[in-house]
Image (cartoon, rainbow, N blue to C red; front, side, top):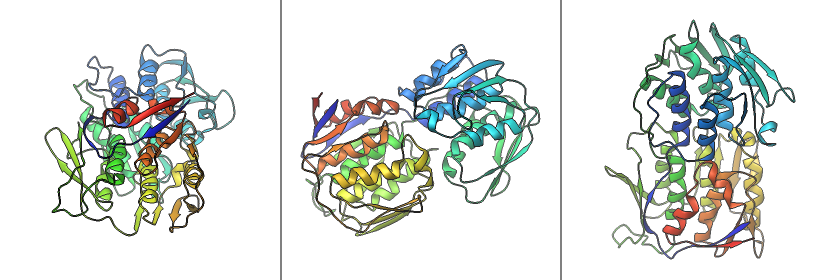
Length: 419
C-alpha cells in the first residue's frame, strides 16, 4: 500500500500530539518495579507501548515485542530481576539488532540470560533472579537504552548500582530523562561525577503520573511549518501559518525538546502557552547549518529532509546510533533523498553532509520506509514542496504516532490510497 500526499496551501490547525513513547515505556517499567496499582495516565497509544503493556500484563512465558527496540532493551533488564523463565523475541529485523552489550552487563550483575538463537542477538531466554548489584563499566557511546535499562533496575539490586561510562557519552538527555523519572517514582539516583551514576538500593513508590506529549512527534509539525511556502518572510508582515501543539511542557524532561531551538534557525518561532506550544513562521532561515545531533538522534531524519527541501547545506554529526535503529537510517536517507534529487553523503558512519549538490530527481518518486516509522513521518512533510509525493508502507507510523495520517488530513493534507 502507498499514500499519495497533497499538501494544503497553508497550515492553520491545532493538533493533540501523542503521548511520549520514551516517557510511557519508562513509566511502565517503573510502575511494574513498584508493583503499583496506579497506572500512569495518558500513555502512548503506539505499537511500542502496547507491546510493553502486553508483556507486563501477567508476565507471559513467551513475549513477542515485534519491532519495539525500547521494549526489548527495557524488558531484558526487567525480566532479569523478575521471578520466572521467559523467552523474549521480535521481528526478523529485531533479531538482527545486537544486544550483547546489555546482556554482558546484566550477566556481570549475575543475571541468567541465554541466547535462544544467534549469539549476541534476540531471542533471549531469561530466568529472573535476585541480583546483588555492583560497580560496572560501559562505553559511553552505546545506546542510551542499554544504560537506562540498567539504571531502572538499580534500586532493586541488593547493593544498588554504580555505573561508570567511558569515552564520549552520547544521548545524555535520554539518560537524564530516565534519572528524573526514577526520582519521581522514589528512587535515589544521580550523577556522582561527569561519567559515573550512582543508584542507591531501595524501592519504588506507587504514584499517580501523567505522561507528557511527544517532542519527537512535534518535530514533524515544526518541519511542515518550516517547509510551508505561503507565508510572510518578514516579521512585520502578516503570518498566515499557525500550528498549535497540545500537551507539551515548557520545562520538559525530553531531550528532543531541543529541536525547537534548532528550528528557530530554520525560520520557526515557538511560543509556549498553558496548553502547549504555538508555531509560526519568522524571518529568514540561515544559509547553512552545522549541528551535533548526538543528544537527539531521533530528529536526524527530520532535519536532514527539511534542510534539503529548503536548500540549506548542512553538516550533521553525532549520528553513530543511526546505523542500528529500525533500519540503517544513514543509508536510507541517502537513498531516498537521491530519488528527490539531492546528493547527500556520509562520513565515518556518523556524519551526514549536503553541500548543495543535486541530481536528476525521479519523475514519480516513491519513498521507501524500511519498516521505520521515522522515515515515513520525516518524508511526508516533503509534500509541502513536492506535489503528489508517494509514501510506501505508511502504516509503519503506528510504532510511535498511530494518528499521524489522520492529523495530517485534519491539517488539510489530501491522502489518496494506492494499493
